Amino acid sequence: MKLVTIIGARPQFIKAATFSEIFRKENQEVLIHTGQHYDVNMSDVFFDELGIPKPDYNLGVGSGNHGQQTGRMLEKIEHVIMKEKPDGMLVYGDTNSTLAGALAASKLHIPVFHIEAGLRSYNKFMPEEQNRILTDHVSKLLFCPTETAVNNLKKEGIVSGVIHSGDIMYDAVLRNIDISDKLFKNDIWKTSISSKENSKIQYLTEKDYYLSTVHRAENTNDISKLKTIFEAFEYLDKPVLLPLHPRTRKLIDESNITSKNVFIINPVGYLLMLYLTKNASMVITDSGGLQKEAYFLQTPCTTLRDQTEWVETLENEWNVLSKIELDSILKSVLRKQECLKYPQPLLFGDGHAAEHICKAIINGGFNHE
Ligand code: UD1
Ligand code: UDP
Image (cartoon, rainbow, N blue to C red; front, side):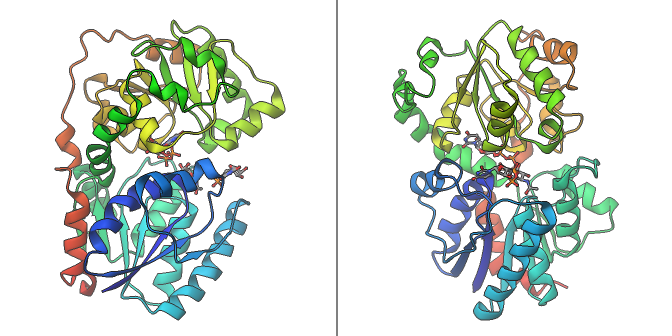
């Protein structure tokens, strides 16, 4: 069987690593990198450390407004599909790359397989929510990471082709956590971050720092929100390590936002990110993927958003949503952790989601009407 797979943004590289290895044992995969993320530390680092195959096509689309970026991808992906004539198109998640791949294939009557289908925040202002809904509605096979996702699709009348596969990001954590431990334990991780970047990281100790990432449009389009987040960080009882997405870095540099309690570093590779997550006292983030990794690695989390698609992580207050207001952030982060009871990682599958997805695609799943 021949699949065309679309990847383009950081979390998609991580998800693709697990699936590609299994699928390629007996099938052909044509990998398209849209070029949505292109900095070395947003793209190449993941290919190098996770052994992701070199893309067959790099569309080099780069950054831009939504319509411009998605439109450029759509045109170029269509061209590749017409040349490669695949049996199916595989897309991951909810980025503009996801939507462009799904739309290009659907218009050419190529069956679309969507990994991470059925997630909903019920906030249509989020670009990701629009991308998810549209992608799900043109997909033939919809691989849901959770039972909640299956039910969300049912509410929209989508039941055919829906498969509860488990979460491919849970697979990725299980595959990589021991490797990450071995590579970075005993403070070795500090040597992999240049002292020029931030010499203060030498003072961080395990379970005595917060790990944060911030990049979501709703928190970065409005500079006052970013200022509030930084202000809250200034009042926290432990330093905040912040591997910063280039989008947020630009804003911070332009508006001179600072905080003595925040240690900013460049984005790091996945293996180091797992290590930093496991050893943080709490994760503070607006990332979808990182919320779950915190949960899988038993690190409490505060999510800097009004909604989450990953509602399972909210159980027992393991993850808590916070409005972007000073009091709310401080209250959420400083909540009592002693009595936190760790919930159920099995809500995200059995750690073999990639195998289940592979089987469903190969076993004629694509003929599903
Ligand atoms: C995108 C996804 C988001 C996902 C995130 C993962 C959409 C609409 N959003 O958001 O769902 O959570 O990826 O990280 O698809 N930039 C660089 N270098 C890069 C990449 C980006 O400098 O390698 C800067 C550019 O200024 C760019 C900005 O970051 O304009 C935003 O990048 P973009 O890919 O449009 O969106 P993300 O915020 O990364
Ligand atoms: N991540 C990483 N390095 C970083 C920040 C994040 O490897 O500096 C990983 C993180 O561990 C997770 C994924 O990137 O696996 C999440 O991506 P991101 O937050 O960019 O997107 P989202 O999940 O919100 O779509």
